[in-house]
Structure formats: C-alpha cells, structure tokens
Length: 441
Figure 1: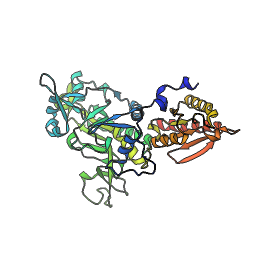
Figure 2 (figure 1 turned 45 degrees about the vertical axis):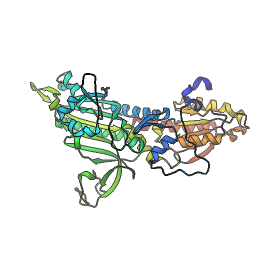
Figure 3 (figure 1 turned 90 degrees about the vertical axis):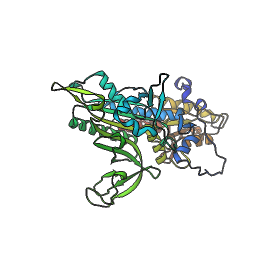
Figure 4 (figure 1 turned 180 degrees about the vertical axis):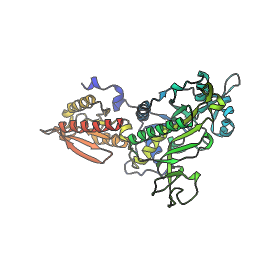
C-alpha cells in the first residue's frame, strides 16, 4: 500500500531540500538577515539566484500554491474572473497615464529589436484598462466586472533586502474592478475589502487595516493591510479608543482625528493595498460603458495582495529563531510521518507507517513520509521540526508495545502525546473538520 499511495514527491528522500546543518553547540550568527530570510534559506525553502532574486524550491512552491488556492477560492465567491495578462506592457500606455516619468527609477524597461519600449510590469492598471478599452464599450448588465491575476511582478529596488520582503521579483495578486459610477465602485471596493479580510482570517495571523496613501497610484480612497512587526518598514498610527488605524505618512499628529485620544505608533509590514481610482485610468485610455446613449468612463478600483510577502511575513511572525513555523493552512505539508530506522529495534513496526499514511490519504490530509531510514528518528525529527510541519507522527519505541502507541507532535502548540491508532484517527478527523470550516467561513 505504501508504494501505491505515495508518489516520489511525497518522499523526503526524493525531496529537493538543501538544509544547512549547524555544528552541534554552535550559535547562529547575526549575519544581518531577517529571521524569515535566514530560516527559509537554511531550511531549503528558497535559494538566492542573484541580488533580490530568489528561486522558490519545492517546499516554498507548495506554500505559494496553497496560498493561491485560498485566494482563488475566496475571490470566486464574489464572482471575480481570473485572467493572465502579458508581463510586458507597452511603455506608451504608461506615458499616456503619466506614470512613466514618475516611476522610472523603480521599473525595469526593455526594448525589442524594433526599438519599441516595454515595461516589466510591477502592476497592471494600464494593461487591464487598455484591454477593456480594446474589447469595446461595456454594457451595464456586465458590471461590476472583477478581473484578477496572480503572477510575477518586477520592481528595480534600490536596496533589495530581507529576502522575499523586498525583492526585485515577487508574486502578487492584482485585481481590478470596473463599475458604472463611483457609487457602484464603492460597493465593489467594500465587497473586496470583506474578501481580503476572509483571506487573512483564514491565514490566522492578526492584522490591521489602515487608511492609506494614494501616492503614485492615484484615486480617491486607499486602505492598507498590515501585519504588526518590528521588522516592518511602514509606520502605522493606531487609536486604541475608537479603533482607527492610519499610515503615519498621512498624519503626524499625536492624537486621533476621530476621538482626540492619544495614538500609538507601530512598525508594520504592508501585505495588501486597495485603491478606489475613479476614472483616472479609464478616461485617459478610453475604457467606457454604454449608458443613456453615451459612452462614459468606467469607475475603477485596484487591489493588490503580496503573496510572497505574506509568506515571508508569516514566517517572520510565527517562527522561533531556530525553527520555521507556518499557518496550518499554508504549511508545505500538514503532516510528516517518521517510520523507524532500518535494522533498529523498532524496525518491525514499520508496517504501522503504511497504516497511518493510508488513513491520512483517505482523509485527504497532505503528508510527507521521511523515508530516509538510514538516519535516526532523532535526526529526522529535528529536520521535520525545523521545517515546521504542523504535525509529526513518529513510529518509534512505543509502537512495539502490546497496545501500540504513536508519538504525535503538535509543533505549533509545542505539545506531544503518545496515542493509539484509533485516537490518531479521531484527532485528524476533528482537526480536518475545523480546517474545512475555516476554509469555507
């Protein structure tokens, strides 16, 4: 059954995970890297390709795919349609909207053999608006139109730092809304705000929503989604009395604009940003709708979520100095099963590992089996703990007893128990039900 159930990618022996092993008793040097950056490098989640450029290795890519699945599910609930825009955008479109001059230092530009200039998109307001303009005037019954993509973006950072926090290439979800007028656009804006909160609630890390700066994007309204962290490069002012949050760049006062109470200043990591754009882009690029025998510019909104930044921020906030920790819903594997070492006293109990993974398979729980049975259980346990799998099941010494017991390690809660197979089944049945409720909530 073991060989039938597990493909090669589910075996630790086949997994591309270059782990950095520190000599016993050595201390981790303060090398200027953030905790998340160092841990993801050390544990083979990412690999640096060049300055500000990283490869997501298999486990890192699994984390990203799980996060994408959460985003896709929540956006489908509000009728958003997924597309895939070209990564290259004609620079003339950016010139028309006026953003080419203001953003030149931050963008990558290339020229084709004919001398035409293109931009490697850090964002796609011009591209999406041009798409709608070329399709032709929208009909009122087509609105609201919500289009989004999840793709690589590029920004020529002056000082790439902190790993995936501020890299030159990153993965972002960008969504664009098109409505007849400002009133309808505000309804779309509020709907997407609620969806963002659903996504972040499922991830499970506390966050705040702050009034943001419209900046170079423009528009009439902006909100930012932040994780509070000392490593954050943004500063947010918060009122503990009325609950308002505002980016410090917008307000240098020490008291709340709403209730006049003292404000608290905290460092924060921006993971999402939304803008109500009005007709800034649609009027210039001629994205319109038929209404009352006229062609009127569409009222737009744009909404970004930095997916690789969310991953890095989650690791930064949850992890210890030595071990990765993940939100359960995006951990690379939910469970790691560790069978006995080959030719050990416990080796005859190996068949229980088959039984356990069959149970996990039937319950649709993703798992990895650490089949490197030439290594001790202790060594494999250390690797699994450092990688941050939420649950580790060890088939060890107690599996040889007349009433076999298995070690269940709840890594996120630092708990360990020796339980029977039936108790193991009950545990994952209840755990799986809770996670499914969270996913659909």
